[in-house]
Image (cartoon, rainbow, N blue to C red):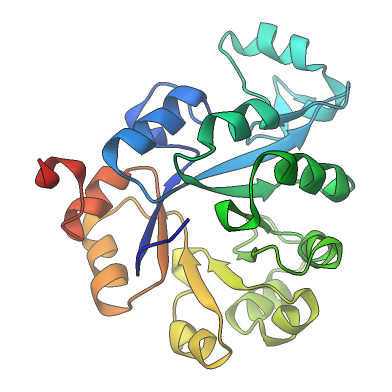
Length: 242
């Protein structure tokens, strides 16, 4: 899929506009408002099903200790599988797949490539090892290294490695660097340009900040729960096309 100069990525679908994030409804809403890409989170259940779900725990129980059926019963809404989601987005919209855990990269890549061509998706992760492994499986897959770990064990070292991720980029061979918006300081975007990396900033819901990042800093893509607002800033929302 050919992407525009600046992409608007719908975080967990257009999650700010629907009742439940990471659902088919959220993904459909993202398509409806004209988003360029949807972002989703992948975890694996106790019975080996890759599902679209963000949180590590459900009612205090790890997702990987519950079956998909149990998760459906607990949540009370339809938590889609990765395969179901891939089938839904095919031919409709680019998908940005975040692997929340390591250990099943080969299985995930095989399933994704069963349904989509390499230019129809990219894979991102906070885990350097996972990004590196995906590149080893297939170097033509576009990968993104996420920066902005919420609760790092060593805050100082982690933040330094996120503000200046040169060695991490070399090791992972990532194509895209995806920082939390508060990390965009000290010429971050310029430094990534010098390294030949695209910048995909997350998660930005404040409209004035969107304008700064899209118009002034010229990030390559912006991840938001409100893609309709970001598209309006770029004069690309569906309402203006009618």
